[in-house]
Image 1 (spheres, rainbow, N blue to C red):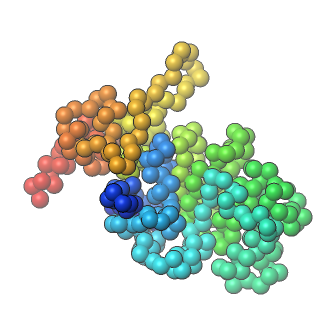
Image 2 (cartoon, one colour):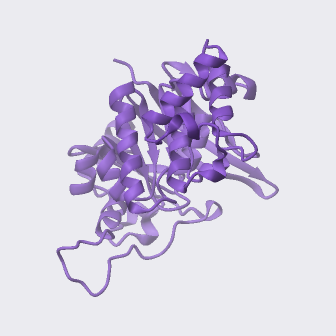
Image 3 (tube, rainbow, N blue to C red):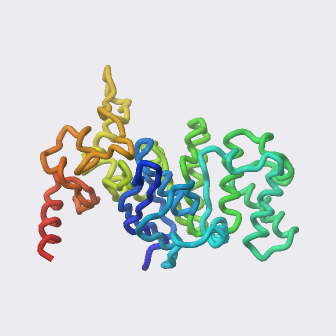
Length: 331
């Protein structure tokens, strides 16, 4: 069975007066229907940029400079702005970190939901309003029949995020890209939104790409996880394998930085240094200046993803990595 979403060797660049900055460099992954894929990494790793590329909302002068994005086997990375507008909403839903950026303060939430439904589904206004009320009920908003005629400012942060999720689901998309959907919410509301995302997959069969920096959210929600660093995926695999048996030193560092409530320590673990700027990405593995296990080859050659037990990782410390490079060199 072919994947719902295929991203192959995606390259995103930002031209400027000093040259061209490469923000995503050969990002590849698949997403199956009904699956939740987590994308995790520090700020600046390229998580949100990957999501924006799929949705077709790259900020100028950013551009897809190479690779392919396929939805149900059809390429969508080269479509015009108008063509992407028909796909966005109908086939791809989007949930952003701040719900106020997705909601127009001048219109009631009902007007915004009904407009989206009418634009993508063959329903009249009465049917569209009923569907909007049903969506609000499904996303856990009480008294939906009354609240549908209220404005965004009349909702709390958690309730606004539920409205945004209802908006993302309005046209029954097959893929939902959720960019930090729980970051601005308190912990109890986070848990409710996470449960809601899981229900979306279970009941509607939609795939979810969940972008976050919170490994707790990843562990609770996702089937698989892709770890990004400096515009590349450095490890990808089943969530429990990546969390419990990380193969890449960067993933190990992220896992070690999560506090363990069963152990009393004076100082939390941290990865020394910071994510490199786009104009200063080092030669070889981009993580090598911060890696305590780096060898000479890490500073010269860039590794590709290779099999590492139950996951795939891009690291020269893996025995499979060297074997794959040898095999490719002889072909």
